[in-house]
Amino acid sequence: MLPLRLACALTTAAVLATAPAMEGVTFTEYVKQEHTPNLKKIKENKLEKTKLKLGMIKLTDCVPIVAAKELGFFADEGLQISVEVQPNWGAVNSRVISMELDGSHMLYNHPIGAAIGYGVQADIVCPYAMSINGMGISVSNALWAEVAEQDPRLKEPGYAMPIGAEVVKKVVDARKGAGKDPLRFFMTFTSGSHNMNLRYWLAAGGVNPGFYEGYNDPIGKKDADVILTVNPPPQMASAIAGGNCDGFCVGEPWNMQVTLKDKTARPICPSQYIFRGSPDKSFCVAKEWADANPNTMVAVVKALIRAGQWLDESKEHRKLAAEMLAHKDYIGANVEVMAESLLGTYVYGIKADGSLDRRDEPEFNTFYKQNASFPFKSTAVWALTQARRWGQIPENKSDAWYFDIADKTYRTDIYRAAFSALVKDGKAKAEDLPADDYKSYAADCFIDKIAFDPKKPNDYLKQFKIGLK
Image (cartoon, rainbow, N blue to C red):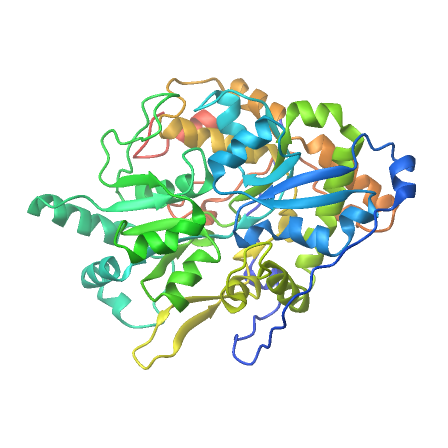
């Protein structure tokens, strides 16, 4: 019934060539650019709306929006764009639904939560996937010391990845036995990628992250071994520095911030070792907005596709992207911190001699290669399986129900129209467009070695030891 594409993410060499050490890289202060919209395109493509306000959260993976604006890709399509920083994912959700924002940088499962009525019932669509991978789980220095006692190999740099949550389970069990408070982890949004990534990692190691009790439960603590709490991405660093959590899951630059600058925590497992090729951020709009502005929608996606291409073309482009993001109107964080993951490296800690345990991780941020920008409907199916697994969907659903929600939320038709126009313009290669809307992942893409076949969501759910079926 549904075409199936069996693939895992490619090897690290497929994304960027060997990543350089950060030493010796010189950054310059970025000056924002202004571009005049192409008036010919407005008339030629019958754009319904040309002045748009787009949202972003202070995370490195907002960069396709920033790059498309700063490089003039939006202007090439006749669009005049303003980018507005948002305080948290809840605000983003509300402002996209109300169309106060024309569109925004969002979590890949924002449209899913809205579609199933978890927290709020609304119609949000995803016509463009902004990135894959890109999340990190970090733990406080105190918790790292505890897990290193459980696994002595972690006391010396160069330990192999992944680090499973089995080491955390030993700490959890010890605390329970001693009558101590449970560990507390922060994530960024209940129906969000960081929540699901953290839960997947914990459960794969035997730690129950807790179940939600239906559509109106924002906490999800039933049977929990640990406590998971929402916290906005830019506030993660201060939260762990203040001792308010033992760890968190968030995108960059906040894992590198606490490792390199604050020195209050360190990464324990980046997302590519939990689900290699995992969806993360998307560009989303209200369905009502997409329906009212179909030509403008295609123009926006064309510009974003070009931005993703540009980002994955070279390290020089990634360096410039880091400089863009460091501007005060965007993220405004330390450029060296943001450049770590963008340039294909990741720092796992600071060695006893003060040097960095820096490793090549060129898959960490991927924006176009590996079909990273294509809004696979299988992404929606996977998001729904995890929402069911943790009780955000309180009852069992048929396989057909999963496919129906995927069709409503992940708009591959819009992406395909935009991509075809770019091919016609000579700005994209036809062979870069996937043939199928559904993609499966082999067992070795996941930390728990459970393969994902989007054609069989209920059979997939039955394989998890921890989780609802």
